[in-house]
Each structure stands twice: as C-alpha cells, then as structure tokens.
Image 1 (cartoon, helix red, strand yellow):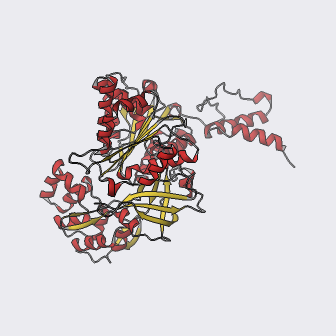
Image 2 (cartoon, helix red, strand yellow):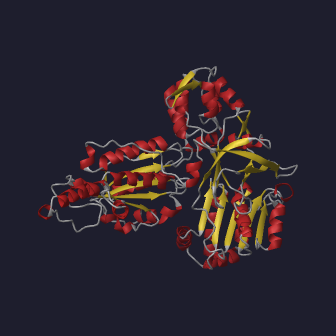
Length: 602
C-alpha cells in the first residue's frame, strides 16, 4: 500500500533538500520519536543554522563541529574559486558549519571574529595578488589589520614556477597571518601550473583536519575532479573538442620581422559557448626536432621505458606529448644542479640577473648541452613539468562569428646557443592546413569583460597580438547594434608591414562602432613611439573619459607594455588630475577594485 501521497512526498522532499547530514540524522530521530506518541516527542531545537543542539536520541556532535570555517578565495582565472567551492561542499557534507566568500566580497575587518580560515589564492602577473583580492591584501598588510590570536588558518597558493615570484601572493598571506598571531594548522602548499594532484592532496588534509568528530571515524574523503563550468564540463584538457581549421592568413606583409597569423576554427556541432574576453586553450605537442635534440644531448635512444602518472611508455613518446621541454624554471634548474652535483650551476641558479637571460631563452636541450650529465631516463622525466596547453585571447565575437573561434598568433622563432628555437604552439599552428584539426576548449576569463552597461565608454590598449580581444569586443558591439564610446590604442613596429587588421579597424571607424583610434608604430621614426607615449599625449582626454566612468583594458606583455602603460596612467593622474603619487596609486587601485581597469597580461 502507498504510505504517503504524491503531494505529501513532494512536501517532505522539498523540506529536507537543504539539510546537512547532521540535521538529517537528527530529523530521523525526531520522526522516530513522533511515531512513539506524544509522550515521547523530542522538542525541536529553535535554530536554523547548520549546527544544531542534538538530543540523546540523535548522533552526538562534538564541539569541534560547532567551530565555523570560512573558505576564502582570491582568483584571476577561476581555478582558485573552483577548488574553494569543491572544498566547501565536502566540508559541509561532513557536518561542518562552513561559509564561502571571495576576497572581493569579504570585509577583512571581520577576520577578528573568525575561528577557522582556509585560504585559496592565486598569484597574478609577477607576484601580484588577483585583481579582486587587491583591497583585501592592502588591508591585511596595513597597520589597520587586527590581531588574530584566536584564528586557525591554512593556505593553498596557486602559481607558475616559470615566474620569479612563484606563489608570492600565497606566501604574503601565509606570512602576514602568522605575524598577526593566527595559528597555522597546516603548512602552506604551493601549486604549480599542474595543480590538480597537489590541490587534491591538500584538500584531503584540510578535510581530515577540520571535519566533524562524528565523521572522523567512519568517513573516507574521496576527492572528485574540481567543479567546472558548463563549457569545461563539455570539453577540457582530458576531453578537448577537435576543431577544424577553416582558414589561416598571414597578416604581416613582406619585409616584416615577424609572422603574425589569423586563424579561424570551426565550433560547429560542439555546443561550445564563449564571451568576448575569454581564452581558447589549445593542446600542443613538442616539435620533433626539439625532442631529437633533447635525446641527443641527454645521450638517450628514446626507447627507454619510463613511468608517468602510473603508466609505462617509451621516453620519446613522453617527451613528445606529455612533458614540457621548451621552458625551464629556476626550481627545475636547482633540482637538476643538486641531482648532478654541479657546483657551477648551483652558483648560477642563485644569481638572479645572470640567470634571467638563460631562463628566458633556454629549453631543456640547452640545459643538457650546457651542463651535461648521465641522467637516467626516469630521472629526467621526474624533473620535467607536464606539457601545458597553450592559451590565447579569443579574437572573435560569438554573435558576429557564430560557430567559429578566431585567434591572433605570432609565430615565435629565435636563435640561442647557435640553434634555432621554435615556439611550441605558434609553430604547430603555423603548420596547420585548412581541414586539419586541433584539440581546443574554452577557459573563461571573468576579469576581462565588457561593461554591463553597453553605453559605458571603453578604452582598449594593446600592442601586437595583444589587440586580439579588442577585435572581439568591437565586433560584439557591432553585432549588438552599438556605436561610439570606444577608443583603441594599438602599437606595432611598422605601419606598412605590421598594421594588424588595418582594413577592419578602418571599416569600424567608418561605421562609428570604433569612435577613435590612436596608433604607435615604433620603428617608423628615429625616436621609438609606443602606446604609452600615445596615452600620455592624449592624457587630458583619457583622464576625462576615466573620470566620467570609462572602463580601461590592457592586453599584452606584463613585463614590458603593460608595465609601461600602468606608469603612464599614474603620470596622467598626476599631470591631469593634480594627484600626488600616492593618490595616483590609490586612484588606479580603485579603478581595479571597481573592475574599471582590467588586464589580460602574460
């Protein structure tokens, strides 16, 4: 017979969907009591929070479960947010009282009221915190930060060891919280670009440390893959979409010192969606010539059997499709020097300036040639980082170019140590012919977005291939029927040979979609002129646009152009706004915190 009607079952299901395991356990006991009759009814607790006062009939929850945990994240590309969300869900599933917040939305003055703090933070640029976390960092590093003797904390730091200031943002917070008296309950964990395994192990430790006592004896944590967006759920590094190349055009003219390609890929049938400002990740393989050179310098045959992620394969296959060969980090070089007991290399690693040029240009064939050794094949494999997908700013608009995604790619070639070096992805893409396919997927870029209000003015600054997302922005605005309120600063070497997308910009200017364009061709006159010079020349108008609410975007090299543009903006604030250097700095920080100064730099 049917015990409950469909309506009763629906009401009960709706009532219990948001209850924690501890609350469900209590409810089971409460309902059991109800079934015994009115004399055995257990009074329902007058609370609605995740921590409940449990009667003797329900499982006993220790005092540890009542301690509140705050999971706080600062992220630029979204990886930190996903890790934080996943950890929060697991902590809640084990009966913990947990809250989740971004550093942007959190008032750091509340830290003195917190009990447990779990921090996930990425490092942006060369040692900087994510844009959304800058205000939090400014507060915590200031004299206003409170003493935190009652707080327990741990930090997961995300970064890229190819940069000097590896995981610097995490290091800064870890050190500062200790200075403020907080208790570090787990050592900080630093994650490189291949963060998944390290982050998973850290999550397991956090859960073991903080989970409710009633769960500790009988619950085994099993980490699921990091929660991901709809696009990434469809396609990812493990399951890329095989996109067909529709067209490849060299945009630079004869006489240019570079080859810049415009590539168009088909997304037809994929279901992939993206927004202007997003990134396309492309799977790559190492060039066969580079693999041959590494094998030669390391005195390997390529047939040696090695183990990678629990699988056995030959060394040549591992070097071709699994391991990073074109970049070398300081950490790797130090590990290699220790492994081969090379005193000269150990000394060189500690000389930051002397090492800079070598690391910028060298690949692993250069390392093995300059500092030869008799490494075992497995030892080399253990030194190398996983081969990373390459990421490019999307140059197309989903509305103007349906079922397509466009890229703007400079082919990288240079000579070092008497040998030609080829950029891994750019040269692979340059060799593609129409009809060839590449494995791709979308990486959302939430911190590089058009304003919500389409009437907001936008200033876009890009040099070379850094202009790619602005093509996306402008074609999107055209597709939406918008005109005006747009100003593009573009820089390259020469007008005649390097004016990327020249005819498209001219058409957008004529239609009014692009209101104004300022160009800087550095090699067309004796004194070099760059986009930052054009900014300063138009400083009064740039400042006026910003003062009336304009959003400003910068895309390109973080060490060169983006850094110089930032200095130019500070100078404009001082010259045009009458600000002191400190006030100019605060003004830019305010623009960043308001998402009115957005940077896509690399």
